[in-house]
Image (cartoon, rainbow, N blue to C red; front, top):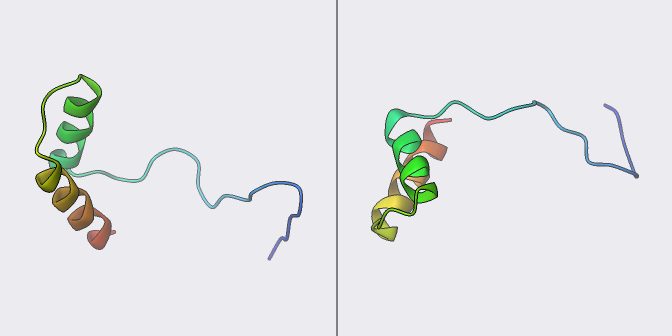
Length: 51
């Protein structure tokens, strides 16, 4: 394994796969739409569990 003291090593470039629900929530939030934070947090937490 490479070790680095000067920079952070990454395992991938780009973004991880997202469900349609996550995709829509991210774009809605970026567009300034009013979102229920509990729903947002639940959907994101569920998506992380499935990775």
